[in-house]
Length: 379
Image (tube, rainbow, N blue to C red; front, side, top):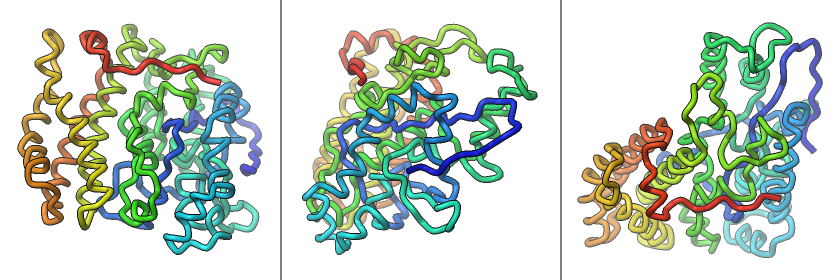
């Protein structure tokens, strides 16, 4: 059970806009303890700053309800205790059965590592909880309280002035919060668990996440865009489309186009990073090369497919990466090309970060190409 939360004398809302955003297909990476070229999104998370979803409920009842119906809450952790496959993977990895759901590397993606606030000993929240995706919120300099404070005591969100809004967003960013607007950071977090890049895990026959695609995940059963209307689970984050502090013009259709293309770019980044950490040809290399081939060439052709929209970020990336991709496909994987793969990953990361700042409204031609998946029904 998540740790309980007690707080008094606060005249503002305490909330965590933090529910899991990865795919409904539970393919989870129990990766290595450290990895210098690990896929984006695997940065260390401080378990001592995990607060738990109980602190979300007062202000995010609908979001928590949606999360509780998702596989992040109902299935991810249970697989460690009930799945014969989990026991098989653990045996091959040298993990004792009693440790699988308690202290193994598997809990980093199948659960949420935490620290007991009374004993100060490591513990586990038995789900992929809010902060597993949006980062730990606690601590004196954490973002938990700050992100729901709109001014002096009692100030409602609708009356927050622009200066305070900008200060609040900057403070929460500095404290590590991955907000709904932080598309690139959230995408990396999803890929970190849903696309496997660890050779030992692959050798243990763990699924590699070959079917994972970001837009399908974000528009699927883990969707929880209920902040502005608890009765309607919107296709995209309502705080992003809300004109308050952003002006008019943002649309769900535009955001979905950006989510799709950022997902493709992060896919390239992660695939190249996973190649860079591979030591020999094998299942990981085969999977990552297939991902690169499936992702890169549609991106390469996209500028020609769009007659009006301009996508200079993708055009420049395609030009820079084409020789690397051609060499990879023609000559095969080369473990001595680690630096080249890392540089390709960095190029993709820069393009993804730049593209994530767009609103997507000028990309209507993408809809005609049928690239963006449709939103799925949620529980």
